[in-house]
Picture 1 (tube, rainbow, N blue to C red):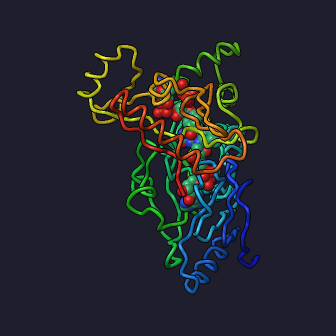
Picture 2: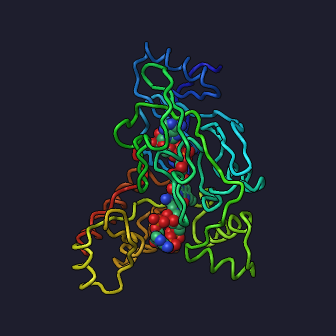
Amino acid sequence: MQEPQKNISLKTLNTFGIDVSAELFSSFNTEEELKYLIELNKNEKKEVLILGGGSNILFTKNPEQWVWQNCIKGIEVISDSSNEVLLKVGAGENWHNFVLYCVDKNWGGIENLSLIPGCVGAGPMQNIGAYGAELKDTCHAVECIERKTGQSKTFTAQECEFGYRESIFKQKVKDQYVITYVYFKLSKNAKVNTQYGSIQQELDAMQIAEPTLKDVSNAVINIRQSKLPNPSELGNAGSFFKNPVISEAKFKSLKEKFPQIISYPAANGNVKLAAGWLIEQCGLKGFRQNNVGVHSKQALVIVNYGNSKGSEIWELSEKVIQTVKDTFDVELEREVNIY
Ligand code: FAD
Ligand code: NAP
C-alpha cells in the first residue's frame, strides 16, 4: 500500500471541480488497508474525511482532515433464490455501473436510481433517492469499520434509520464509521415502478407500452441527461438543497398566499415542497454571480462556471436560502456536505 501522500490536489476528485488540496491523502482498496490507516492514525491523531466520488461535497477550504479515498471494489452474490438475490457490494464501486450490472441481470429494485453519480458506499449516507425510489427500498444491511478502533460493525437496514435524504450516518453516528460494503436484496420478478410522472411520459415518447427494467433505466437516463448538467462539463453536486418538509397547517397558510405552490404528501401528515419551484419563484433560476450560478434548467442545482472558489458557491447558497426565507418563510437546508 502507498505511503500517505502530501498536498494532493482534489480538483478532479470533486464534481464541483473546486481546486483545493489535501494536506494528507491516502486511498484504500481493502478492509485490511483501511485498518492499517486507522493504526497509523493512532499516532497522527487526525480527523478523517472519507471520499467517495466527491459528487455530494463542497470544499470551502483546503481540508485539514486526512482524506481517505474509498476504493473497495467487488460485487458478490451471497444468496440466490428463485425470487431474489442478496448482493454484497464494495463501497468503492461506481453506483451507476452497479445499477447497470443489476439491470443487465434482470435484478430489479434500483433501476430508477440510474445515473446517480458517486460510489455505492455513499448511497446509505443520505439514502439516495430519485424517481420514486430510494436506496432503503432494497438495502439489506451496511457493513462498516469504526474509524477510531478499526472494529467491524454491521448495521441492519432498520438500524440505519433511513429517512428522506437522511440516515444514522449523517446523524447519531456522524463521522464515526467508514462504510465498506453495502448489502442489497434485489428481486428476480420485479414489477417496474413508473409512477413518477416523467418516467411514464418518457416511456410514451419512447413508444414502450410494457417496459422492462432496462427500459425504465433508459427512460431515467434520458430524462436526467436532458435536465441535469453533466459534472464533467459544468461543475455541480446535483441538488444543493433538500426539498423542505413542513406541517399541514403551515402548508395551508402558504397555499392561501401562493395557490400554485407545488407540494407532495410526506411522512406523518407533513407536506413536502418542491425547493426548485420555491427558488424559481424568487426569480433565481438561471441567476449568475461571477463564476457561480443557479442552473438555468434546474433551480435546485448550483453550478461552477469555472475556477470558482467553494466559498463563492457557499455565498450563493446563503443568498438562495435567505431569499426563499424572506419570500415564503420556509428554511431551505443544504443537502450537499460542506467541508
Ligand atoms: P461523496 O461526495 O464522496 O461523499 C458524500 C458524503 O458521504 C461525504 O460526507 C463523505 O465523507 C461521505 N462518505 C462517502 N463515502 C463514504 C463511506 N464509504 N463511508 C462513510 N462516509 C462516506 N443524490 C441523490 O440522492 N439522488 C440523485 O438523484 C442525485 N443526483 C445527482 C446528480 C448529479 C449530477 C450530481 C453531481 C449529484 C447527484 N446526487 C444525487 C448526489 C450524489 O451523487 C449522491 O449523494 C452520491 O451518493 C454521492 O456519492 P459520492 O461517492 O460521490 O459521495
Ligand atoms: P422533478 O421531477 O422536476 O420534481 C420536482 C420535485 O418534486 C422533486 O424534487 C421530487 O421530490 C418532487 N416530486 C415530483 N414528482 C413526485 C411524485 N410523484 N411524488 C413525490 N415527489 C415528487 O424533479 P427533478 O429535479 O427533475 O429530479 C427528479 C428526481 O431525481 C427526483 O426524485 C430528485 O430527487 C432526483 N434528483 C436528485 C438529485 C440530488 O442531487 N439529490 C439531483 C437530481 C435529481 P424528490 O426529490 O423527493 O423525489
